Length: 264
Ligand SMILES: NC(=O)C1=CN([C@@H]2O[C@H](COP(=O)(O)OP(=O)(O)OC[C@H]3O[C@@H](n4cnc5c(N)ncnc54)[C@H](O)[C@@H]3O)[C@@H](O)[C@H]2O)C=CC1
Ligand SMILES: O=C(O)[C@@H]1CCC=N1
Image (cartoon, protein in one colour):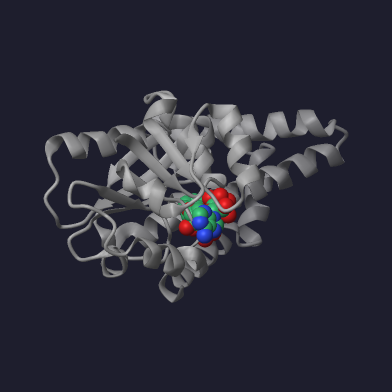
């Protein structure tokens, strides 16, 4: 029996598998996806074997990761109904499917771990919120799930009622951050900086600022204050961002994400 099987090998499947390969051998993993040419390409790059149907992928693995879009869930859950054994654990990362819904599709006795990772997993800097169903898990199984998510970043166990907040804070937020980096870089280009350098300057300043929040434990407002010299340059920009409603735009965007999680 292999350790981990992935159904779906797109953005998240590939990001998670890349991290996993720091911890597990390629022979311990297997995956499937819709198109054989995509499977071949990933297999050539990683050395992980693939199968071309979901039931074969699910059959011989201890942990089965569902890395497919919510729209495909009904079809995949139907194909796997009654096929997951008691000793197996299903890890589901779709924003809209609750543990109860996945169990309803697969069978009530199936143990389901619901999680929300993010694409920075691709570079080992992911952030995942993880919730366990109310079933019994051994210490070894819990540790293994922790090792899985830690292989591509940080993870925290959260109650399921916080998973939509996780989607806001870390699942979807990389898109907002990329928009901010793109806008900063456009601004630097406007003042003559070459495009590639502009991305380096903008992205490194976001990376460094994030690290300051995580490593100093200082309030972000205090860190912002430290950048703003009295009568200096930065406060001029801060005043414009306040006037243009940066914070309320972010909070409104978060509400839109949260509402969609509930509507999907
Ligand atoms: N992209 C992101 O930033 C994040 C995505 N998620 C969730 O992760 C899941 C996957 O998202 P992505 O990787 O972005 O999607 P994707 O579209 O990049 O990949 C989906 C994969 O599913 C495969 N697939 C589709 N139909 C299939 C079928 N019938 N049988 C087998 N495989 C099939 C495709 O071949 C592809 O490999 C979604 O539920 C998404 O909401 C969660 C956190 C972050
Ligand atoms: O946009 C989405 O639906 C997925 C979930 C979180 C990030 N991407």
